Amino acid sequence: MDVADAIMERPTGFTVGKRSFFIHPVTLGKMYLLARLFDSLEINKQVVSTNPYMEAIRICKTKRDIVCRILSYSTFNRKNDLFDNSKVDKRTKLFSRTLSEEELATILVLILTSDNMDTFLRHFGIDKENTERKRIAKVKKNNGSISFGGNSTYGTMIDFACQRYGWTFDYVVWGISYINLRMLMADAITTVSVSYTHLRAHETDSYLVCRLLLEKKKKKKNQ
Image 1 (tube, rainbow, N blue to C red):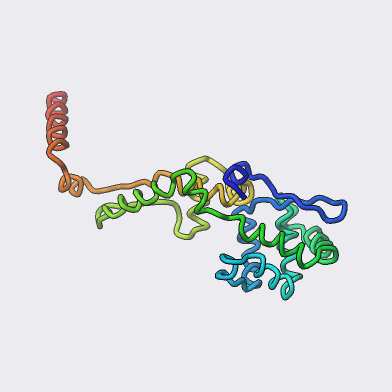
Image 2: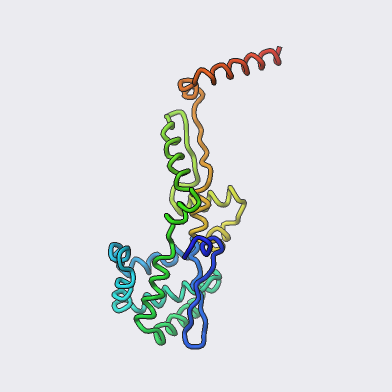
């Protein structure tokens, strides 16, 4: 998936006989729904990074039923469909019955390699901004704070998106693609709170002059 496809959340299509299906970009909710299935595949991440098709073939030979269920979930986009076990089971059986190991492996590679965040972050220059943000974070002291969302990744993303964009919980979890949500979060401005004493300690001569002039002006105004 390229940058444009990720932003537009464009699905990837394939056919089974005369029927057309689409692999939809994963949402935060779907990611957690599929987490256990992906864990049960016991994917060799090192092999995936060098030869994803070879690893996909191995998985399809040994874990065919799980791969078909993952593919079934991936072709549904609405929350109600994802929770309709009869629909998911029916499509799982269809894929298992009609797709060869090679066809399954090809589609599985698309799913496994769709979340290429590093490429997207570099494309928008967000990676450089994140490096600068980490440098700013070093000013944190005991009487200062750097706050951003919840404690877990799941909670942080929901809290961030709901507060910043005014989105509902349901839209954040099921409506926007996980990769777009992560890019928005990576591109966000972190709230940095530093103590007045700490700022004074690192004050330059020019800032000192400006501060004194402003304080003098403020005193005259209050008199």
